[in-house]
Image (cartoon, rainbow, N blue to C red; front, side):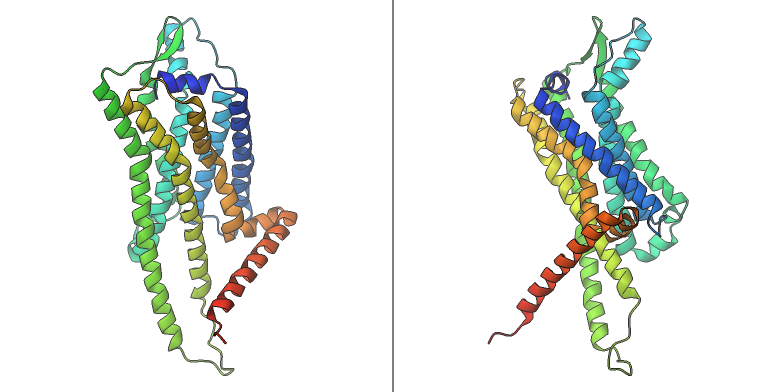
Length: 345
């Protein structure tokens, strides 16, 4: 991020401040609810996927709080001490903490996807790997945050104190700015998106193969005395597995959609050398990107069964609404399935 975009994020209009406030408020309330429900109201709290989903919500909660502190509160003036002024400029006024937490959120989503990938595609290696066993599995939650803050460490170095003000260093050359733009696009968007896309394609293939095998096995399964097939306890586990995969797939798709406009806009801005950007378009892209930090709780509410069960215990009134929603959705799907399978007259 250079001087032009930095100015747009510092001198915010009232409308943009209101939008940031709404996004931050939804992020704080929604992610706090997810953390409380998944740590207090669900039976299985130590599952790796559950740990990483909680960690995703913790990171998004921190990002929502930092959005308020960094963009909606007055920027502190630099102290007279050169060392203190340099520290305040590099760490706080540069918005380093905010952007590093944003990157940590992206890396945690990649980590969450890869955890499910290894669990489904390589189940035997997954079970034998000590990294995926409690309490070492907590490292899965710490790693994305450490990597995110280390990667973003270049950001404080770009901000320096000149004439008593915190400013952004200009690029040494156009080539340096273009290389910077390519690296940012690759590391923060294209590479994570490619990894998650590959993982979900492989997961889909494996689950599809397992489904065909289960259907074949059920067709040849003997029936009990009543003429019905005995209950398979693996069916419940398979449904739970597919439910969490569908939930995470929606989270991944939302990440891709929310960040695409801003990533493309910022990349074009850096490689074009055009110092005059459309403020309205830029604000729309950045608001859409920030929206990603508060959207996941809505996905968990309407899609993630484990979260729904915990939410029903924590908030019975809301739980009843969710049950009605699921019942209506199931009825609609069953009606469509019956319509498709019924013979034509």
